[in-house]
Every structure is written in C-alpha cells, then in structure tokens.
Length: 253
Image (cartoon, rainbow, N blue to C red; front, top):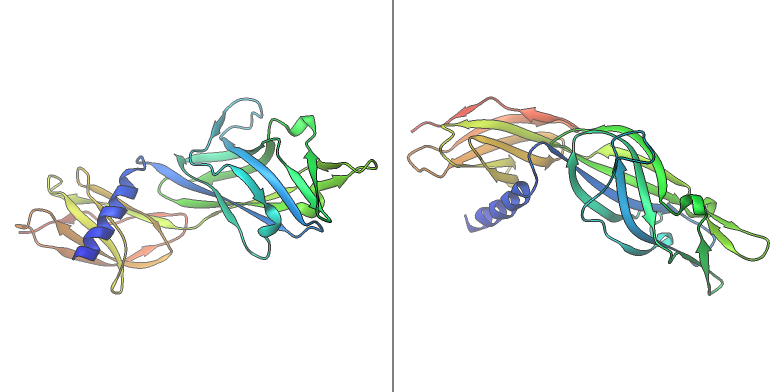
C-alpha cells in the first residue's frame, strides 16, 4: 500500500501540474555522423508557431534545456532531450531553434568558431504542419545533419548552415472518464497485470490518465469515502494519438 500510495502521490502531482486540455511536446536532438572531432551548437531557446506567419505568433517552450551540445555524440540512434512542455492543442505550423554565439567545430584538435549567416541569427525556422491533440504526448525529433550543415570556405573559415530534418510523432494516448457521485474524491489507477502504470485522483468527478502506451488496461477505482466500494473496469484499450473515453463509473455502497 505504501508503494502504491507513493506512486499515486507522484503521478497525481505530475498530472495536476498540467492544465486540462493540454498536449505534451518533447523535443529531442539527434545527429548523423560528420568528419569532425566535435561539432558543438549553443542552444538558447525553442519556439513554436501555430500560424504560418514567420514574423509574429512565436512562443517559447517552457523547460528548454539550454547550453552547449556536441551533436557528434548523438549518433547511431542516440538523442538528448532539449525540451518537455505542456502546450495548447492545435496545428503547429513552424518551430524555431534559437542558437547562441558559441558554436564551434573541432578539426584535428583545433577549435574553430562556426560563423552563422545573418539570415539565421534570429533562429532556424523549420516547417512542421501537424496537429497536436489534448491529452496526447508527442515526440519531436530534430535530426541534425552535421556533414551537410558545416561549410568550409576558401580562407579556412567554417560556416554553420544547419540542415535539420524534423519528425513529429505521437508516443502515447490517454484515458478519461467520470465518477459519480462527483463529491467523492476517488483514486484511479491504470493497471496492466500486476503493474500500476499510472494514477490520478478525480476532480469534480472527472479524471484523465495521460502518457499511456498503446495497449489494454484495467482501471481500478478506490474511493476516499470507505462507505463506497472499490471497483474495476477491464479491457480499456488505448491507441496512440487518441484519448479514450470510458463510460461513467457509478460508485456503490
């Protein structure tokens, strides 16, 4: 019980920190190999735009991991998390990766600054044109091509002209529902076999279990008022990029 209680406290703290009706976006950086010792980029911000206007409408993601990243360490399937944020549902049209001035390449042990063309100093704009739905977690992969992104000039200088391929995919789904009477605060768990995968509490009767992998779950309902009986609902299917709504649960005494 202590273990389940601890899990539920963590899960509920996590769920309650996110506003209702939000999607979750995780931004990862990866790379293809390049013929250098190091390629370091200075990440300062990540912005998204729900419009096609390249000038206005930009908003920064929260919880962006800023700093220097050697992208040559992110090859052969490796990646690193740059940002993890709750955001409004809708259609993301564009994303902008903002780099600082401390970008460099290391060649034969020599560190050489990477110059950035003035047209890209406001940030590299990438087209997305994909919907994000409330209650669903998405992974946006920024695949940085180091070999094509660095141009050597005739006078020995190196210019950074980022070539990045984007891929946005839903990585899970959610379960939502309603418990009556709505005055009874009820703990709700998503189970697979004997494993507790997620948990939350009802708020005004409603609940949502987020970030669930596709699969079939059993829901367990444990009312805080012990005059009501605990109960389960089996065979609840979750599919990727979908919020599954279950029938209203009516507690009995």
